[in-house]
Image (cartoon, rainbow, N blue to C red; front, top):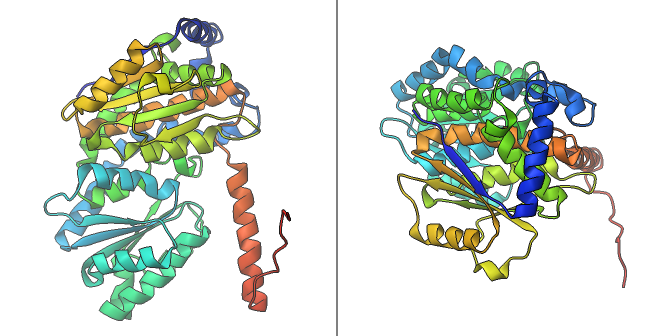
Length: 410
């Protein structure tokens, strides 16, 4: 085990502002206050209710047997495929693990459905043998429309293949305690119900059951993965000085850079961990983009020559040491030489991926504090869910959607 290394080179003015901010974090004991869940670090509203992810790694290690048992159970049942049914935060981490680790011998191949596009649903259904598939319904609230639709559709499809008595045994639920999904799973006699932690939001849920149950089912050594992650948790801990705390340093760079007009973060990931960028994109964009502020993550951009970029960027290069890209190495070195702000993070192997989940969660929380926003709510997402429920509710009642009014006429 080893800690993923982080270094950075910043333009002089930005470097000075970052140093000053880190000094402020030290003087005002902000690292300890973060771990104490002090909401005044952000907006002083409900932030303290959303920091359960800080301690989830140790909690998962304490109940590792449950994860080992589901892995063994699924392996013994000789399922060929595992199909995760979820949206957003509940599906992005499993997708990263699927793309990074691939098919693991002796375990089902993981597939992830996070789209209601009928063509995509049909395509994924054709990829799996439903007679030999374990379905994982992943919904934190249990009331999100898309996972509920997936469950209803695939439960009927599985029932048609294996019969009504056996159908529930082909499903696992991951949901928060007391949710509607928990009730549905119990009624339909699901094989297993795993609980989420109410104080962990979807995009911060990678190390919780929303990430680790699919990881176990697809055959990851979750004990090893979590032990490696714990190294980063300790390095980012309450006793760690702000200027040597990997997550706080990264978050300070991002937050201070955004306040200085460098509010675009280009994420460069080695080919072996390329899908990590999609997870980072949601974490950063949804956490920081609100009340006219935000950091704009740019994922999977083909890097241009340094002259193509202005002074509105910071670059983060997540390099897999066991399988780097020479082209990426050269492009990032050129950016650094030209004076652009570059953060370099090196992963020795893919089992250290969990360290990045945690580092970037800390970093996002710190950047949110520096930007003066609540890094844990999602006002536009909630507003969208309310409007969607209004539309679907009216359709169920009347059989038609409400008439639309154009917002612009030329």
